[in-house]
Length: 115
Image (cartoon, rainbow, N blue to C red; front, top):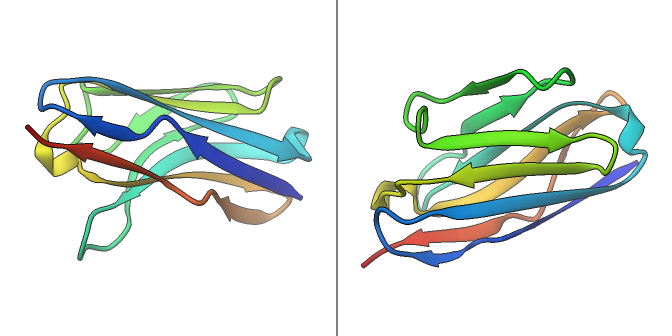
């Protein structure tokens, strides 16, 4: 089984940057795809980015060009570098991986973009 713990969230001004980290533990060799989702208040959880096992990345149009995701499979780490943040990026950000034929979620980390 894999467990996920996110960190790095916080309060940032519009135009600022944050780096989120997701630490996986347990059977990390079973992780296939990894990624990030977010959920804003009163809205459904939405996909942000996916990082394939070979490192290939895909992004939602709303974050393309501003966010960059990566993974260090050997260490069981997944990252989300966010820049030029906007108030509409405010949300709880969740790390998500597919491992052992299951989708696994972290507990989430709050990102608030406000002046």
